[in-house]
Image (cartoon, rainbow, N blue to C red; front, side):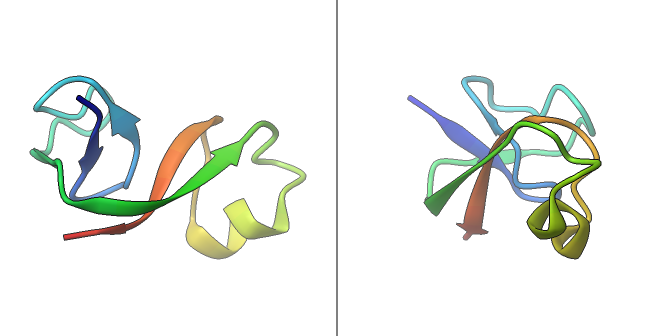
Length: 59
């Protein structure tokens, strides 16, 4: 099962975010893949600084 961090929206298979150590949720929607956060306007707008897969909405 894939979970999304309730703070940074990073997708992970763990129940605790490996980046910010916050809890995760299985209730998420939308998939955003960031490959180059320095050049991505979407990443800049959302405050994403690390490449990876992110949820657009986490409940």
